[in-house]
Length: 431
Image (cartoon, rainbow, N blue to C red; front, top):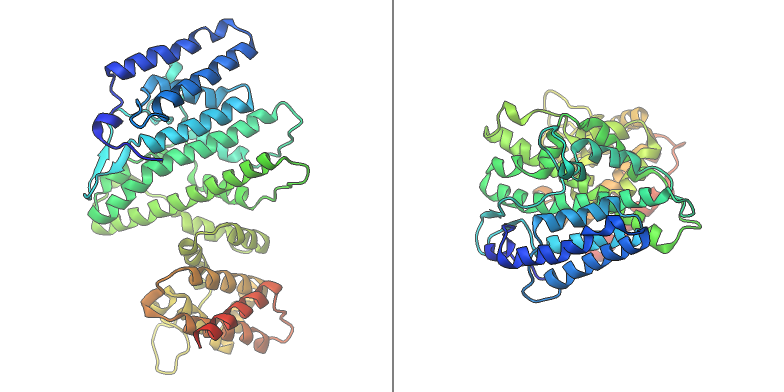
């Protein structure tokens, strides 16, 4: 879908066309309170279609006003049928793609932000009004994540709320991503921390109403909770997949925000007002430690190769001995070596190190970490410090093979065998 990013098109300020569109479309909703549910729902659907016809269908559409966005969001939050909720969700996401409120100027490394753009979030005071009740506060966002683990039974009327919450969560993450991505991109180029400081994601996480550590735990738990697709409709299964995808996107954004903030801290461009919290990656590693089931499920579901590899590296680094003095005959990688997968894998070439690490975290966890780290590395085009894929494949094979040499009782998991097979096949193609 083509984006309209000229200020004349993206401005949410009232203009003649916007005022006329607002008056004509909102008039469809004015009388819904006096009608029965069926007629009121038809009016809401007609309103959504009218907005689509005016703002999306024409080549030069009219951007909705803030009041129109608010009305659409009200339908998404409080719609009484799944058709209404789904229709408002799809319309809102398409409108944000067409009329972005934050975007990078063409041919420039500058960020354009539309003044007084509408947002579904409320990061302001506790003052309540009709508008504020529709907007999502930080505490409600955390509640949404906590409620994602609830089971879904399409035969019960209460499930409309559960399904509606899934649509709402997907939409809110969509908004956060459209706001965060261009800001983070420009930050990487300009090191202007204020761009990220003012992002919706940072404002959300900085709220005192959000328990960040609990939020991270809920994200992990939701991603790892099994979903029984038997007896469920195809649309419900797809909706659940979409919710999980949004959860992973949220997790990646939080990790990237932490990484950018760390860069800003190093440059000395943050202050006390920016706050301090435990990095998301550290919380994730702590949650996965000592839980084989959670670790295996999370690494299967979480498919971002860059950050999956970083999780594996941080997990293994905690258990690798770090000698205080480098010796010529030392088989233990030094600090810099432990920043790469190949450096960590070389640790397992030493029988004593391999035995000690395996004893601490178990042979199953070792194989899970090595395997997922290797598969993540394969998908990253540029390996660290010029290390070749061939060298990494050899190190993976040597590490897993050495586990059996250290302890004959250790069984190589089916997953471990798949990793070995993959490494061997890669070596054959490189030969």
